[in-house]
Structures are given as C-alpha cells and as structure tokens.
Image (cartoon, rainbow, N blue to C red; front, side, top):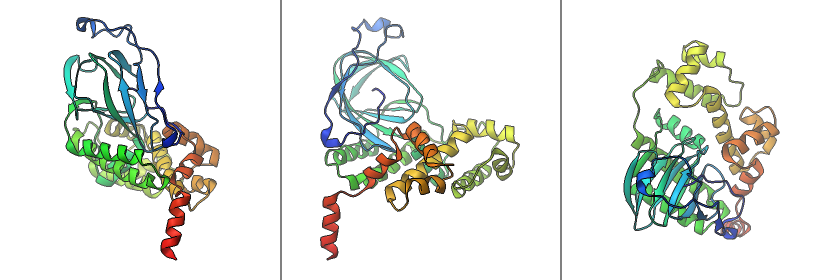
Length: 320
C-alpha cells in the first residue's frame, strides 16, 4: 500500500527492489498516532503498463506504514490468507483476507499498522482514464476512500491484468487499456453519484463536457466554456470543482493528455502532430504535461504501443 513510481523497465527485466526501512512496531493502543510513521518496507515488481493503467505486486513487512498521496487512483487487492491491521484513515482495526479491496483516490494518503507480512496487488488508474469513462457514461461521481470492499468483478479484472503483465507483449497495451476501462466503469458504479452540491444541472454539465471533448484541438477559454454552460466565469470555476473534484483547467489538460496517449498508441501521427491535434502549443508542452500526468514521455508511450517484431512477422505470414 504505497505509491507507484512509474517505471520504464520492461516487464521481463523487473525484479524485486528494497524500499525505505520501516520503524519498529508499537502496541495497537498507540497506532492512531501519526508521529513516527514511516514509509513502509516492501518488495515490489515493476509497474506495468507504463501509462493510463498499471499494476504491481507488493510484499509488505509488518509494522506501521504511511501511505503517501499519489496523483493516480489506487486499487489495492489483498492476496494473503489473513492479516490483521489498524487503519489510520478510519481509526478501526480490520482482519483482511484474500480478495479484500481498498480504494485510494488520487492525492489521498493514509496509514496502517499490520500485524504480519502480507502481499497485495496494487492497480493504478490515471485520473484521465476515469474522466474519460465518466464522460462516456454521463457519471459525475466524486471519489472517496473505501476500505474492506468485496467485489468479484474488480478482483478478477485485477487478476487478468496481472496475468497479462506476466505474459507481457507490447501489443497487449490495448488489452490492458480495455481492462482499465472496465475497472473505471465498475468504480464509478460502486461510488455512486453524490448529491449535487453545485448549481450546474446535469444538462449543463453534459453540454459542457461534450463541448470539451469535441474541441480539444482548439483553445478552450473560461469565457467560451462559460457561454456553453450558461454560467458566469466565477460560478463555472467554483461549481465545476465542487461537481468533479478538480479544476476546469486541470480537467481540460487531463483530457488533452489522454487523447494524446491514444493517438500515440495508434502510431499514425508524429509527436508534434499529436501535440497540435489535442490543443498543445508545441511538442515540449505535451511532453511536460504527459510526464506530470502519466509519469512518462510521449516516446515511451509510442514504443509501448508498437507491436513487437515477432507479432508483425506473424501478421505478415497470415496475410501472405
């Protein structure tokens, strides 16, 4: 249960690495105190694929651990038989068994005190991926931390993603992306739609999001979007953040990055052409925001989406 650092290693080069040391365990009656909580000690495989959605196997040591905030959403699936732990986020003790799920939204941290070593799978989802699915499904769910969930669909999707990682081929990135879409849709369904705290109606929000999707290649100013939504500039900025949990500016940037990622995977356009096609002023602007949102440069995403030489050769044989 620690943040994923994006890796550019190939899956067959991944090997467990030792992270920072933990502190000694204390009695459960002091587990609610935050003083002395250190990043946990764990062994981990490299995350995979490199962007949009990733998965890593974790092996954690007993004791107190701090969950650092991360820019991506995290789904943590417990894979050990049973582990008793104290959760700093809820102030409660839990007995986790195989299949228990914790959902940690982006920019959300926490901590725990585990009584024994345990293993888990950690799935990372880029906020842009969930934004895309939310637009397609018309959902405006706001994500909150959830603990001790049981959901067979999420469990089996995570296992499928882990199996795909173990048998990694570059062309399988699209398959991983389809798993990410299914996970995002399931999370949106589990979270449910929160009571609207803004004064943007569903029709206003749909009109606004549809306009953004259709005009990512153009400048999108607050003035233009305010006219589309039928709200003042100040109201649109504040109501949009209340409704979605992110600023209007950041949402547009995430949608540009996600569109660029899909175009790079397709491989029909140069990086500079992709940058202009999604509304960035130049290639370096795209690269800077892609690194910030996804943790990797455009060139890495392009290589990850390119079919391997063996796959290309097999395709030629089939055609011949």
